[in-house]
Amino acid sequence: MPGWCSEYSCSNERTVENRNHGITFHKFPKDKDVRKKWEVALRREGFTASDYSVVCSEHFKQADFDRTGQIVRLRDGVIPSLFSFPFHLQKLVKGRATSTSRSAEESLSVASKDSPEMAASHPQPQPNDDHGYALPASPTALKTKINEHLARVESLERDKKKREKRVKTTVKGLLGDLRENNLINEELSEKLAFYSDLKMDFAAKQGHEYIQDCREFSLTLHLHGPKAYKYIKHNAFSGFPTCSRRGRWLRSVDAKPGLNKIMLDMLERRCQGDPAKYESVSLMLDAMSIKKHVQYNPHTESMSVTMATGKRRATCFNNIELEMLMHAYGEFQHVFRKKSNTAAAAKERETAWENIASRVNACNPAGEKRTWQQLKMKYKNIVQTAKRKKADSSKTGGGPAPPPLTQAEELALSHNTGRPVAEGIPGGSSSSECTPQDTNSDGAICLITVCLTMDGHASNVSMCNQLGCELKGDPREPLQTSFPHPVIGEKVFVMMDAWHMLKLACNMLQAYSPIATTTGQIHWRYINRLHDLQKDGLHAANTITDKHVYF
Image 1 (tube, rainbow, N blue to C red):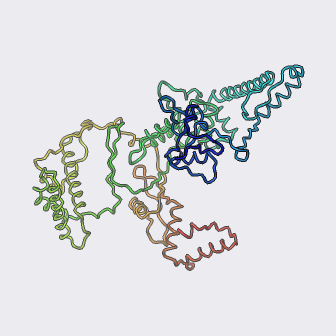
Image 2 (image 1 turned 180 degrees about the vertical axis):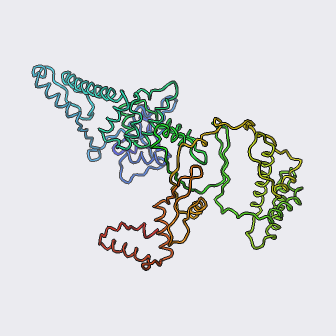
Image 3 (image 1 turned 90 degrees about the vertical axis):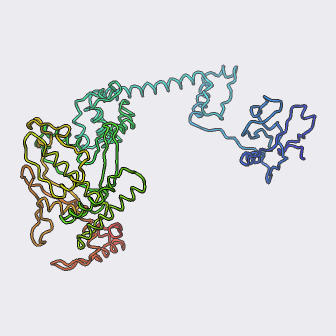
């Protein structure tokens, strides 16, 4: 068992005499990482500690020991740091030469020249290069440096007060400051000019909430000019809303499926202020894939259900299919009226709907095959329509008579006898005569749609044709790109999105090349050749890149 210290130049041996002198010996730690640090700290080439290697206490600091118990122990994670290495193993410690240390040296030299008698009687200490942040030893130099920093602080405070005074008057002055710093463009300046007469203290908190003008101004500025918003918040006015607060405001926007009511209300207010500018609008339509989704709004305590699945809609049911559906449902009515919710009962109901689907498909073998899910949804729709017609027939107050029940709807009501049926006037309705004051904002036309913009999908083209356009007629005849407004009778023009139409044309040319025209054939290889010429270095400026060819 070795009893010598593992340090390079240490000759301490584990003896009773050394123990009486207070020298203790400590084994290398079992943790591999800490053990490796100990081996590196010893700086012995090729040295690997064994389970019996030790280091004496003379190579540790006093703070590294735990002497609270009877046995002297090392604290966790300590590393030996006190060594007497030879010169070639010592680290060269070079002091930091910073601007502060250099200025301190210069101030010391100036002070010594100013008072040679004092320097002779009281020798000045040498500057310490180890710490660049050390204060000058001369009181005169120290006072000079403090005065310089105080003057700098006062100058910065004056500049800050000037900026606050300039921008805290009105938003108009703030916009001028932003334009001088090239932080906003003319378009954004025109949008924010609406708030020019507002005082800058409008952004101050009123209790726990910001006023409405502050919300609109801050959201508009951050949306169109985030750099300008950051400049105002950090340099001019610190009372602007934080990022988390803006996020809560944006989450409170009514974003239910359908038309955005907030946008319609805003356009209505703008139209009342300037009808000539905001009366005519363009409606842009877009489509997206929607899945079944149920969302709860805790603020309004309402549920929003999306039933669209993105699947192709089934064609209309004929009378024979509807009649067979109703009669088949009547035969399996005892299965559907069971109140059991077990897996066996659910399987029995599914089997019944499959039998109904096979009967409906058998009566129309040449038609579309219906799934049992489609038939189940169709039956529910028929029942709801029949109940609504029956409720409308019981309403009072005049008005046109509701349409009569169809044979399928009468059969659906007969299947649901004995169940609670909603009759009478629905909640929220009134039996009094409708007056102009009762009409909602949809009745008072304020905005006139003059153009519809959409992608060139087949569904959009079909919708435009049903509205009154002629977009799939004889290609030799001019297209009918407008339809009459359903209320005022004015023309509403249809405009397909140009970029989407170019993409469709590119896809068509690539898929069906060559395309015959009255002037010749159009080949996709022509575009490939133009792209190859561009890659060969011709620089024809045809703006064709790889993404136009390899897509």
